[in-house]
Every structure is written in C-alpha cells, then in structure tokens.
Figure 1: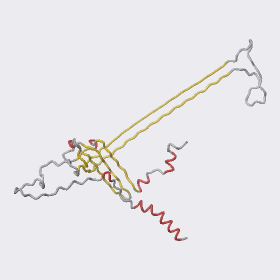
Figure 2 (figure 1 turned 180 degrees about the vertical axis):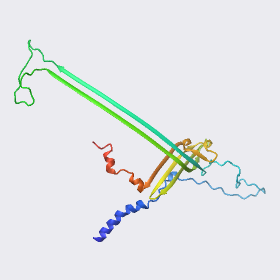
Figure 3 (figure 1 turned 45 degrees about the horizontal axis):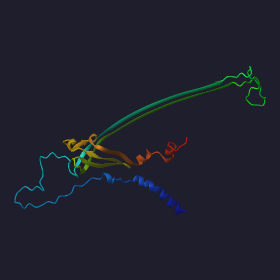
Figure 4 (figure 1 turned 45 degrees about the vertical axis):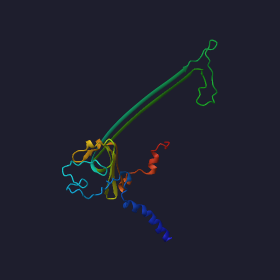
Length: 235
C-alpha cells in the first residue's frame, strides 16, 4: 500500500516539476540561415590583392545576402472601436364587432362551471392585441502596442532584389519564457544606414509575441469556464 501511495505522489508531482523546469521551445520555422562558406583560394597570380579574401573598410554594410543580419525595430500599434445599437418595435391590434343577425345582436350566457368565464351577457365580439419591443446595444474596444528590437537574418533574395527575413528572440524570466517572432519581406532600399528597418516597412509581416510557463498558465481559462462561454452552451 505504501508503494502505491508513493507512486501516485510521484506521478502527481511530475507535471509540477515540468512546469518549473520548462525549457525554451524554439520554432524551426524562424531559425536563422547560415551563409554558405566560400573556399579561400591561394593567390598564384603574383599580385598582392586577392578578390576572394579581401576586406572592405569603407563599404556601407547593409544586409543584402542570405545569412546577413539586420535589426527590425518593432513599432506596432493598433486601435479598433465598434459600436452598434438596434431598436425594434412591433404592435398588432385586431377587433371584430358583435355582428347583427336578423336585426338583433346575439347575446348569450355560459355555464357557471367554466373557469375565468363571464357567465352572462356574452357576445360574439372579438378583440386581440399584441406589443413587442426589442432593444440591443453592443460596444467593442481593442488596443494593442508592441515595441522593441529584434535582430533577424536574411533567408532569401528574390529576383527583384527584395529580401525575405525571419528571426526569433527567446527571453527566459523566472519560470517562464517569452518568444518574439517575426517574418516577412523587405525592400533593401528601406534599410537605414545603421542596418535597421522599421517593422512598418515589412511586407506580409507575421509578428507574434507569446509566452509559456507558470505565469502564462495562470492567465489561461480552464476548460469548464470555456465551455460556459462557448457557442455550444445552450443558455
């Protein structure tokens, strides 16, 4: 019995240990690209200069080849606001007067056993009316902001000269990891002299900022709470 209790206790503590020592999960889709190494050729032409291993001291270095790196300045801000209001009123009324039959209006009495019925002075007159009112109102506001810097690498050079970039930054704080990922296409003419570019200049941008660990788990709604606000909840 004691061994069974110990085994159950260990199984219950394993998920807690995994949460405390959670390793960063890198995404291969945002991995950096390494440049292709160029073999150094010996100089046999008798001159001092060798085009294969020269170093340019006055070149304005900017990313332009696969494997080159550049810095993306994150400056994203979005604001959205939506307001709706609906009012519906509907009213119906129908009335039929007591008819005249052979010069007289019918009038009769009902048995006293009928519940909620007037036992005397009844006619064939009929009245029906209905009213329906509906008022609905909805407001929605959303604001997001992301700022910072992330250094990425050039993945591909397109035929028109544009560059495909991607990169990932992982920050481990206490018991959680923060992931910043970006991918997209840029025009090399938009790169500043310090080899940086604004995220507003990235076409087809895919930017994500997510996290994991104990802090992120505390902000996740449980499955039972999600059920009560889901579309399959009938009430």
